[in-house]
Length: 223
Length: 109
Image 1: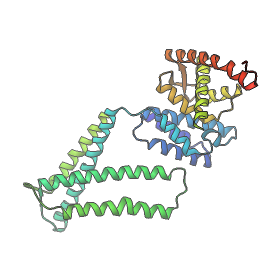
Image 2 (image 1 turned 90 degrees about the horizontal axis):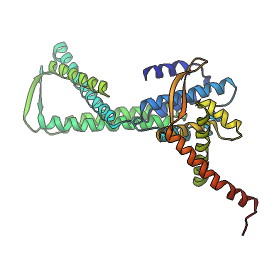
Image 3 (image 1 turned 30 degrees about the horizontal axis):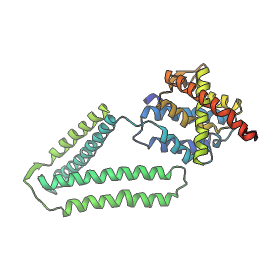
Image 4 (image 1 turned 180 degrees about the horizontal axis):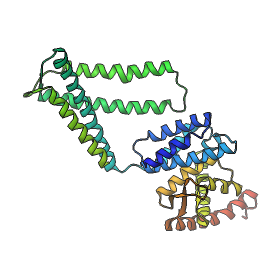
């Protein structure tokens, strides 16, 4: 699988500028159909690339392969790709969950440690309320998944389109940056404290973060 | 539009099975052979069909080194594909003559 992707990366360099643009949009769009079998996806992408390279050598246009509406053609391809097996999809789901928890906990710990031991700010320990932290974690995971999904949809939408850089910067900055960041902050600020409390030293957060991350890698290997 | 394209897709599927039954081919080769037969289809339209035929296990693709170097995906017919081709041929024979007659305006009533 990896070798097919590497071969694709190499061969793509042989495309001329216009063909490269249209093919890479196609590639992005088809790969973003995340619940399809990866092998079949990469194999058909390679077939299309080989075909396009032959057309290019013969001086023919990419539209002879993709038709007049490349996006519709990409949808046809995606529609015929077989589904990914659900076991793999579930493993990838848990991988996402634990990677997210790992990075979030690790960064939280790292920032707290730097502030406390570096600048003498913040406490050396933090108190968590089991009820509050559980609800916040679940809600954060929900937001993170919606965010990833929305981002995938956004990128597919930009395929086969010329989107102005300023629009892209503003839109992604607000929708995928400021908005979710504000929501996360509000969540932790306004959520009332309930449930039994636990107090831990902040450096433990770094270790817990690493454990979550390793768990994520475990699920990735299982997938 | 829907019925028309469904009909054409079905016929194209049958033709693709017929070509693959004769020899194993890869994508581009298949497109050329269809065009040489005089079937004026857009070259890209074969790939969604090849994917569907694989899903239905009528054909099987295999990545192999080609004589000219790069890996290519060669397709061959499965047993189910052979059967499907026979059925297609039968259906086609049954429908060909009456439709031809009808279109030439020589119906016998």
